[in-house]
View 1 (cartoon, rainbow, N blue to C red):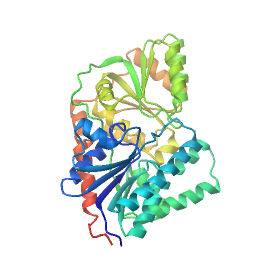
View 2 (cartoon, one colour):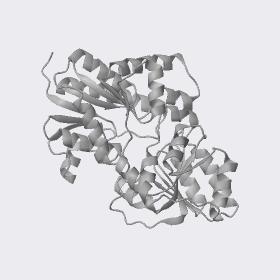
View 3 (cartoon, one colour):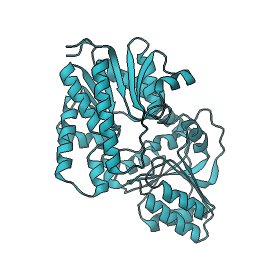
View 4 (tube, rainbow, N blue to C red):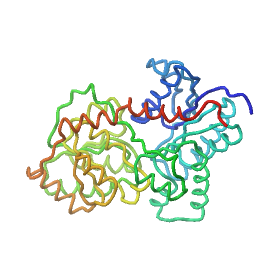
Length: 391
């Protein structure tokens, strides 16, 4: 039905060069597939991806379409839903126009665009790989603290999408169990870790007194706990320094924190190459996350911290998959998400009573395991399992 114009379409609203890790990985995937297939990328941003390809000599033989309205992570929920719906209709038009044989789609944005891809694939007899960076609508219902009939409808839509995917990819075993429990899927759910940021060119020197948070300063990252704890620690005369890199709904609060205390710096969003150069400086990297969310997502910054040789300070419950990963990989410590516990850690570390370092063997192993090459190789293998003569 309808002659296909492309072998592969990659859909991710956030893409290279703005999306520092997965965006780069997906660009490398597109470049490797374009060597012998016709590939197109659909994304969203303030500048056409084709211009960026030309500017940076990337994406050779990769076609692209860009929805020229950049998404903002600190927008209200209703505005983000509206933006996702606009992007959904735009993607539908592009799919009908370009008619790819195989589609790679992630949860950026969640639910609506993957659902549209499933409908396109059913009507146009195509196939798709569904890569869940997080699981919705469960995450949304957590921070809204309600589970309405609307969420049940949205979950049913997502289950429809999941069950019809050629392959479902998730970030952790806990996410895999959640999806299998929700949909009764078995063999076509695979775990693939996101790559770590590339720090091979950095010349940064470790600063033992500086702790950092890199990532989305969102509703589920326990940012208020960090702000309250750091404020009290510094009010008590603490000498450690703190840096925050990233944007989100708590950006203004972090900016005020940095204006109040000389020991706090808030950098906002920074380009990935800048972050790569800064990250190895830090003595610890905060990974705070609501325990319930860890069933439905896995913080990708853990990989970049570990590959940079930065010990991870996971602020979460001891029985979560994040805590188990940090402990089993021997890449950091876990602190329960209580102000007293976090304050105690900061005070004891300042006194020199806490010693932890990532050995070269651990860092090298994680860097290799979480390299872009491994990430792209695994995705290429999954795509190879999706034959060209779909259905």
